[in-house]
Image (cartoon, rainbow, N blue to C red; front, side):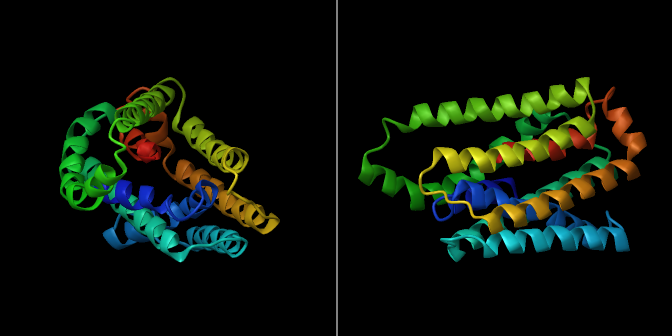
Length: 245
């Protein structure tokens, strides 16, 4: 599932803008909740149903306001969202039902090699020939190294923030980070054009995500407080998903 998330999520950037991809990722809590209900990890309630409806409506409005929408990219991004949601569900099952307690670095020891193997075979047949044709091998090591360093730094920073503050801090920072990604992508990339409908829909979705985070934190206050002293709980595993890009 981690390999699926990386492949589909990164492929989406070939067809849609960074800001629009970030807006579509706001649907993540909906996918996680629905799959969690199916797996018996979440309980359906009227409040949660309302929150999921608000997030879905916001993403729908943001998509409607997209000027150059590419449905191929949307399908790739939604596939990446489903893959990430399944990964989080499986991780939660391992943590809560199987009793595993691993921090993000330990998780990467196990997940990264498996993900690399899953990505190696399709890479040989689909991407390696294109790289050979473009003769871009000399530039790839530097880009991949910098990307890997950023990913490692993100995982480590998330772990340290949760360890020294709380799960609430990292969740609030995550919402702020989403807005920063959207706004910076609009400034840095010339082909990114944001409309008022885009921003309005994304604001609705983010409000729903904030309500979802608040609801989850209220229901899991004892566990959230223990995460501050015991960073090996499930929260760091879920939050480390932001590093995929």
